[in-house]
Structure formats: C-alpha cells, structure tokens
Length: 66
Image (cartoon, rainbow, N blue to C red; front, side):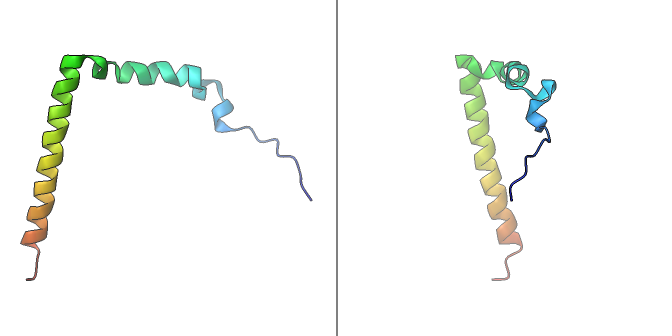
C-alpha cells in the first residue's frame, strides 16, 4: 500500500533554492573567468598536483619494508 509523503524537501526552503544559491557560487568563482588569473591558477594547480604526487611517492618509499 502506498501512502503520500507530505514532508518538505530541504531544497524547497527559500534559502536553498537555485536562484538564491547560484549567485553566491558565481561570486565565489568569478576570478576564474579572467584569462590571466585562469592561466596562473592552472599552473599553480598543476604544480600542487605534481608536488602532491611526489610527496605520496616519498611517503611510500620511506615506509616501505623492501
């Protein structure tokens, strides 16, 4: 037997609606749209990724039992 559920979704609350949340997200990521800043942030992210992969390799080699 099916019964109706009258509970309201969290997304139906006024503060969680898409038109309220989207401008905040756009404001947070606005600086990514600049070509110069975008290039810099890509280089920084690439370097961070490379450094992180090296640190993982170092940790694995330090704790290796071989």
